[in-house]
Amino acid sequence: MKAPGLPSPVEIPDAEVQSHVVRELEPQVGRSARILVYALSDVRRWLASTAGRKAGRIIPASAKDEAEPLELIGGLEDVLAALYHLVRTEDGDRDVPEAIAFGCAQIVEWAELRGAHVTALLFAQAACEAFPANPHHAYEVGRLARRLADYTAAEAWLKWAACVAWRRSSWDVYVLSLAGLGNLFRQRGNLPLAVRYHGLGLRVARRRGLRTLEGDELYDLAIMHYEMGHPLQATECARRALDVYGPGHERIPRLMQDLAWIWMELIGDFRSAVDACEVLVPHTWQPSIRVLVLANLTRAAAGAGYEHLFETSWNETWALVRRQDTREGHAAALIQLAHGAATLGYWSRVEIAAAEAHAIARERREGFSVIVAERMLEVVRAPVISEERLHHVFPDIGRTESAVQDEAASDLVARCANAMRVRRDGAPESPTRTLIAGTA
Image (cartoon, rainbow, N blue to C red; front, side, top):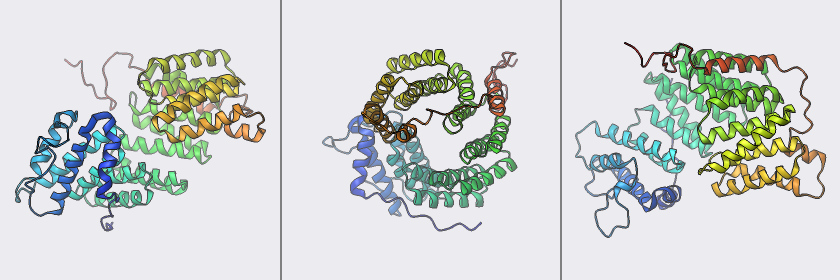
């Protein structure tokens, strides 16, 4: 495989870098966010020069500098201090480029955890330029560009990462890059091409013994086959994913949650969605995920006609929303509650849930949820609304579910439940089924 030329970086003018970084991070780390701007500037100057730099601003050189102390960038103190010295290292140390790239990669991870995706992209590009031999850096650039909806740049960087990974036999990065391209074309609406990329990634992962990545590719293929209207292929991929992951794997609850949503949203099999969500609830404790599982259970219960379960899960979801300080996942959860209430004709509840979802989504700048909530409010507050508009905004209304629950979906629920169940002998076990404790 011949590698194409190194893609052009995602262009963000120097004058705009500080505004991007500060806007993304200043509410969380205060004025110290600008220290990352100085760090990026130092790395860029190092990249542009054949000699180490003697002057820089990762750590303010003057007491008059407006930047805050380095220690206020929680979790990055050592990384920034190391970068400060690395970019001032004299020529001759061949390990410096790789070390600088590693430091930038750590900042990428730190920034992305805080939702600072432009900041993460800038440092990912710096890491790739510092040490292009590591294809993982190029993969990160492509992945982040896709997340920022720069699809042209994402495609170029992911293809570059795949080529470099293939040449260096970095099979994990090769599979990740193929999966990234598959997800990119899925976002663009080209599902057949997306399936081809994921299929190639699946074959490579299986051949190279990359079990988790093999399971991930089967997971993605299952979802896409459902979206393409191929339920038999989707079910088979989901079953194979469960077999590859093995009991106790951390991906299984997420797979089950996605399947529940697919059955509810695309197929109208609300009974299977109810069963899946009820299995998930005892295994889900992260607040932002648990609140969505409970909300999905509420919507599914309404669609299945289980009014008592609808009431119980409606109250549990609202209670969890009120108890949590973080608002992550709340807008999406409340939109699911509104769908469930609409199915049962509880229009005052629809308005309450949609209005709260709209307020939270605007506060958190979650554009898609803002649009969905606004459409819901438009329907419930309008004096007259057409049937077509009503069914477009609330697609669960009027769906007729088959009297017989889909057997394939029911079997998948049982398989997922068994895979999440704790081993009966009580022995501690890792996702790869290797004992990690309790051995004599």
